[in-house]
Amino acid sequence: MFTAADFELYTPAFWSDPDWNARRLEIRHRLQALGERVREGYRDRFGIELERRESLHHPHASNRKRVVRQRTMLFRGKADRKVLQRFLGPELAKDLDSAYRNVHLEAGIEHSGTFWGLKLLPDAWYDLNALKERMATPEGGRALAEAARGAPGFVLTLDGGGARPLETMDERDWRDLAGLLKPGETALEVVARLAPEASVAAGEDWDEGVVADLLRLEPLLRLATWTIDPAKPSF
Image (cartoon, rainbow, N blue to C red; front, side, top):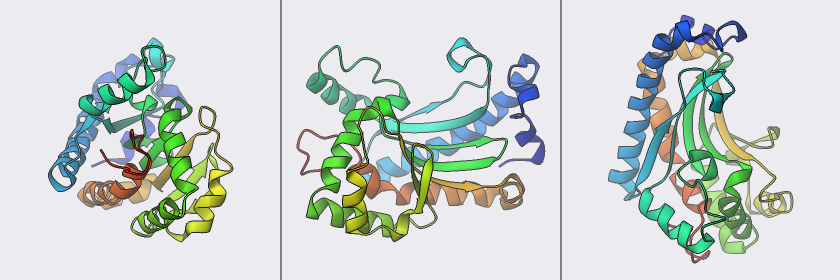
């Protein structure tokens, strides 16, 4: 999937250099293919329609003229976004077509290595609020603990800190975590990482492993997704 030279593209010297756009476009295409496999997996195995997007591969105003990392992202499909938009209203539902305004899966590359997992940023406050409410109930806590056990190898962080192994989190851990979440302010991330050398050595096995890992996050993605009926975490 990746070569050692790929990681050098994300050193500061190359962030804003358009001469490397073609190389970054090649990486975008690789990530696109990976994301498409995940999208098809969610559709075919779980009946979940996700939309796939890739980050920009060239310096642009929207990335502050810097390509620090590249990634593919998958988030709720158009039909599910329309349901949420109707619920929130026109003002609160602006820009739901952006992945970062939804709970989303992602996989990508940066100078320090590769990464993949699930992310809720502050702008996805409605999803984080739904997850927080489920954490606080006995049924939700049990479901989250089961989802965590089924996804080994990930760590959970809040605002980039306090890393804890996801698979060790039990019902009480999830209930306690709910008290730390502030929808609209907190960023929650469930992530796995691999150093450049290990990512290169993995070769095509990297793709296979990442696809499998992201599919294992399906129960957690459901629980972290807003629905009209909070008691029914489903798409």
